[in-house]
Length: 393
Figure 1 (cartoon, rainbow, N blue to C red):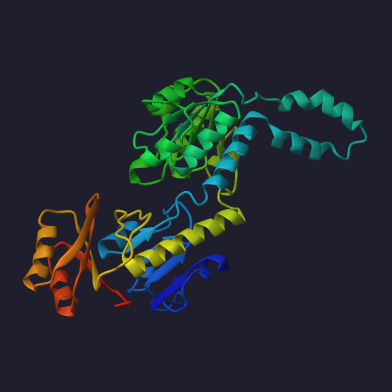
Figure 2 (tube, rainbow, N blue to C red; figure 1 turned 60 degrees about the vertical axis):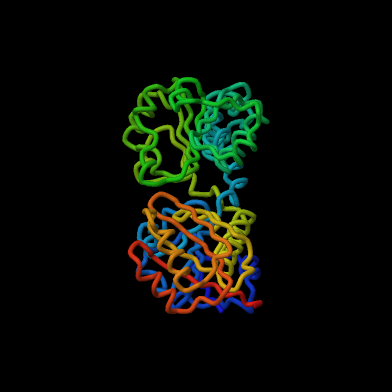
């Protein structure tokens, strides 16, 4: 029996997927093996000491102290793509609002609605101040061609927009999903010199902080409209303000307002509504619940942000041993030797790595006792060892 806790609101439609014969929902102040959450900030001291899995019902994980959980062998996973359509729709809206000052026009009308003058005449006399260009025939640059970026790029093609895509690390899956009409940019500067609009869709991490700054802005096509529906820290605020002031960037639309951006000229701030649809919240929660059960029951890791995705299917042998370890030489050899010394046959093994960390799964034909597990845990470089028993045996 696994205990599962959750923070924030997790839709009952997702929680209903949990097998009540194998899982028990508990309060977050109890001990648990799995934690589900959305936007609440957490670090290692905030969760149960028994936690094995943390599922973020969304794409961004900057609210989770990943560096604190990874050395403990805790899988942190998210739900990439589950909210992609919701974000895509808001990006399209953002692009339209960056072009046509609809909000300015609506505010102006609110200010004159009680006038005794003829409204129809006022509208005709003042509408030009809210005019803007059509998007058809313009060029948009899409930075980051993951689940959201691909949907945005394809949708823009459907709207008659020329699209340049930039992603040096594009996956095969994403590449297959792209419209053949999307052109590839070799460098990010190509986007800034050629595009009328640019939208960014990359994760926020240490190496992507201030991803867009004066280095890129100085090459921008005059009147660029910049959209950020990914994360606020991706854009350097100081440099952004400078290029908004000098008119190089005509408009900045973001779903991640802060105290600085709210006071910048020619900005339109949206209160983080990208994934705020009932469909998105349900899809994200369902995804992390299914991934949680796959990991706890079979050791398979899906959509982890700190450990490599690893899948060996359902457990068919007596035991499956899951080993989290540093990505250093001889770890596999030492692990398999431990089983060989106990005359235990390994019927199947999988090893994957992600940066400094590795994950090894071993299916064995006989019972693995606690003594063997302790020998593995005592080895230098091993972070955590799990044993999953086949309940059908």
